[in-house]
Amino acid sequence: MTTTPRAPAGPGILEKPALPCSEECLLRPGNTNCGGCGMSVGLTMLGRALARADQTCSLVIPACCGIVTAGAYPTTSYGVPTVATTFASAPAFATGIASVRDLNDEDGQVICWAGDGGTYDIGIATLSAAAERNEDIIYICYDNEIYGNTGGQRSSATPAGARTTTTPTGKSEDKKDMMAIMVAHRVPYAATLSIAHPEDFERKLEAALSMHGLRFLLLHSPCPTGWKSEQGESVELVRLAVASGLFSLYEVWNGDEYRINAEPDWTDPAKYLERQKRFESDAVDLERTRLACRRRFDRLGRLAREFPRETATA
Ligand SMILES: Cc1ncc(C[n+]2csc(CCOP(=O)(O)OP(=O)(O)O)c2C)c(N)n1
Ligand code: SF4
Ligand SMILES: [Mg+2]
Image 1 (tube, helix red, strand yellow):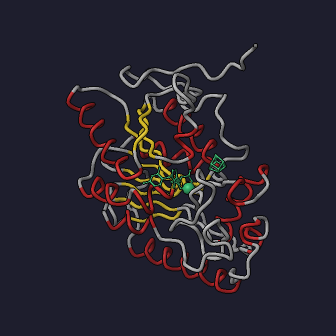
Image 2 (image 1 turned 45 degrees about the vertical axis):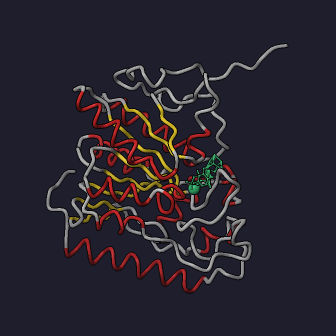
């Protein structure tokens, strides 16, 4: 019997990560992520940013698709030391790893890579605690707006109107504003990311990698399986989200210095919604969605004018 070769085993968790992280080493070929998964693109871009910055990292990943990606021991699709944690403990676990790194005078970022369920809902207590202590970790939430790994249940990141397995007729509540929550913690850096804006994405990762303290990054992460969308349309979908004002690209330093990175061209959000079967629901109120996009961006614009980032670069 022949067996299909899988991704080669990476360093064990007790081995030091290779320095620098090579461009290919973070997410390796052979992983089981669905085609068109925004998380795969995000991980690839994170790997490139680490390579460019001549840095490496340890990953701390709670229950989510991102830890299924690792695969079954002794093989793994991650080329850096990776710890699988419970939902609630990822930021606390990352805090411990960062402390040991510092005690041993070692290099390397400690990066929490977590889904929206782990961030907006189940892990929010330890994330809040780590943010309040300003731990020296990077926290990246890839937000696919559902509990994807367990079949697509609603999370508090699911937008109003979306059908999920637990909201079969469409969710009635609005998406939680996780950025506002993290900004209220006055973390040194909080920023949103889109795989449709790769230069902006890369620049923000570069900024985050050059800083210390808790850095929070929120990635709008298309999930064709849960969104019931075409795999080849993932990038276009999140591009439409930015263009329509549904998802804003911005960054905030220390809780009070704002910068907007892309102005919407006010594409009708219907163009985004109609390409995803999850929004085939009477619960979608198009007029309300259009107004909400304008109001949200208007509010953000006022914050950016009132509290601008004075420094030219990050
Ligand atoms: C305390 C706890 N509750 C439920 C689960 C089952 N579970 C594992 S992954 C997952 C979904 C995670 O959703 P999210 O964080 O958004 O990541 P995604 O699966 O979408 O990548 C759930 C509910 C669990 N592992 N632990
Ligand atoms: S279910 Fe969604 S988030 Fe999970 S691997 Fe598939 S596309 Fe990616
Ligand atoms: Mg999710």
